[in-house]
Amino acid sequence: MSDRAYALFEEQQKARGIHLDEVKASLKALKIETPSWGYGDSGTRFKVFQKEGVPRDPFEKFEDAAQVHGLTGLAPSVAIHIPWDKVDDYGKLRSHAESLGLSIGAVNPNLFQDEDYMLGSVTNASAAIRRKATDHLLECVDIAKETGSRDLSLWFADGTNYPGQGDIRRRKGWMFEALTEMYKAMTPDMRMLIEYKCFEPAFYHTDLADWGMAYNMALKLGPQAEVLVDTGHHLPGANIEHIVAYLLDEKRLGGFHFNSRKYADDDLIVGSINPYELFLIFYQILNAAGDADPAVRRNVANIAYMIDQSHNIEQKIPAMLRSVLNVQTQFAKALLINHAEVSAAAETGDVLGAEDAVRRAFEFDVTPLLHAVREEQGLPIEPMKAYLNSSYGKDILARGKGGASW
Ligand code: PSV
Ligand code: MN
Ligand code: MN
Image (cartoon, rainbow, N blue to C red; front, side, top):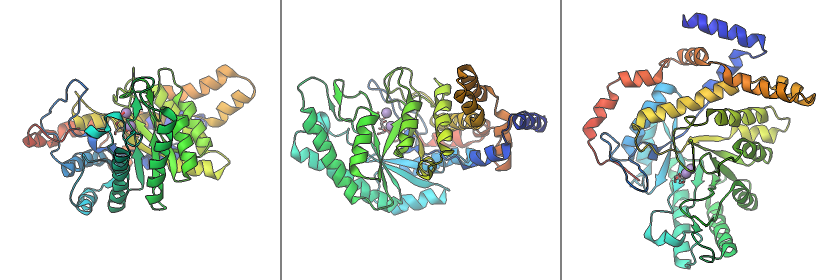
């Protein structure tokens, strides 16, 4: 039955000029990094919920992440957060990751959970606190050397709650100073990925509030600094796919923190609220993948796809499985877009035809395609079912409650 469904699907796609061998190769190359903090306990500003069976240390977080990768083939690296994932010996953590078929991904500094940072970290008016914050950034560069990580993902909670609370222009200068010091400490193969966020925890101004501010910093720092687009960090109605296309054209799109938002930085499972937006992001990326400029194509090849979610009420491993599978599904759909058809319609001013050529790809059921890809990769056809039928979720309950949390 599934063979027949696939054969039918293949025929249907061939008739529209889409060759599934190429689509399958692209699907097999998709890699999505999962965050260590997505496996631990998390919550809202009202409560951190303690779940039974969550990892007790960074080593166990990698063990859980290995389940996600083992069942999907999609998630071979794990981002770490310092000091949440601080260990005495990063070489040991690295070997542990490698023994599980994983690698350590982006290193994320934490400049928001220290009493000293109440009024800012790298933009604090106190020189001593700015020094402390910058030293932490430098510590993360050193950790990245030990873990073999290419990317340093930077998110700053820095901002103010009231007009007059801080000198916005001076703070901008302090931000640049700290980033410059960090940039100089990086090895030539490292990348600084600069995240932005419109608000929260600061409610009046945030020092890096939007992609333009992050881009401006990156531009002034140099080619190893790029912008990180966290899909939850935009005001309602923001056209994220436009930002993606713009940054790709400027060759400064470092990567994504995928998650879903309904209202603000909700950190819900990616693709659960607005899957069409995710599809349209991939549409822009795949469009740029065919650009005549090799530098744009290089940028596309180097995009870091990462999940950034906190699973407060969900079971952690199934939530992460759902997340990477949702990304895979929307990527698969975007791979079915016939770009020549879209541009032919656009060039003749056929607005409806162009829109239809994009949307039609979204409307296909890609299940037979994904099943075929997984079968060829020797993976379970339905990873979620396979996980739920395995004993792993029950076995980890022995860890008890009170595991790692943020
Ligand atoms: C806070 O908004 C946040 O979700 C940022 O997106 C960071 O990337 C993440 O926490 C981890 O520090
Ligand atoms: Mn993020
Ligand atoms: Mn966020």
